[in-house]
Image (cartoon, rainbow, N blue to C red):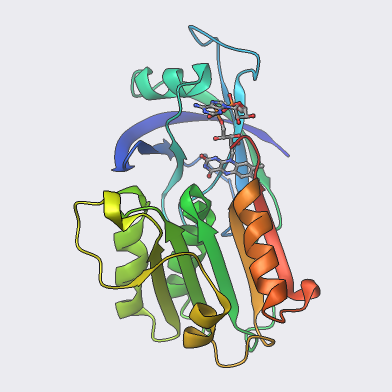
Length: 240
Ligand SMILES: Cc1cc2nc3c(=O)[nH]c(=O)nc-3n(C[C@H](O)[C@H](O)[C@H](O)COP(=O)(O)OP(=O)(O)OC[C@H]3O[C@@H](n4cnc5c(N)ncnc54)[C@H](O)[C@@H]3O)c2cc1C
């Protein structure tokens, strides 16, 4: 892939301990919704054993005029530097990579099952689908401990108003620790929860994204619900 230089343009807290980073979009850079990028710090003030590069999904949609990625701000050298570097600092971008992109047959529904920060590529896919106005059924089931932890909750919820083919289902597994109201699903995803939103579980293509342990447990739930393994695609966020 070609290597680009990108400037940090903005940085925002988007959920508890979670930040989004906006970068200028390099001239000629083309990607598909759902792909990821390797970001490398240039001469950072500190580093550690994991080095100066991390792979982050592109949460921005391809039609948007900037690039954006979001991450849980754990206390690692890479993320400390990312959090404190002056706006305008250059990073190296090696991208796009990955095949966590929508299947071609628009007649087959797409069901996204995301855990925590695994929702990042799904923001890109949902917003691009609205922009492209393709009549394709998309269902997102997004699991977090609390609404406070849920990245892009508003973007994903409000997108339903702009796309009649799209359904967002949030589920919270730790509401006892939340200060917010929540009137949607609670608890881990189950076959019963899936069946409330999907008429025939055997029909869709399923996309699971999140930390490795979450991907493994969600795959188990899907296969135990009768979903054929061939219809399950995954994006594992290694490093969590
Ligand atoms: C295709 C792909 C897409 C990805 N997209 C995203 C994305 O959009 N957003 C995102 O945030 N991440 C994403 N990741 C994961 C990302 O690349 C990093 O691995 C992750 O953010 C961890 O980086 P780190 O600097 O916090 O930890 P690292 O310094 O990389 O350390 C990783 C190792 O240290 C351990 N570790 C480090 N800190 C802690 C801690 N505080 N507590 C417990 N254990 C710790 C981890 O368990 C792990 O073994 C993606 C990964 C892949 C492969």
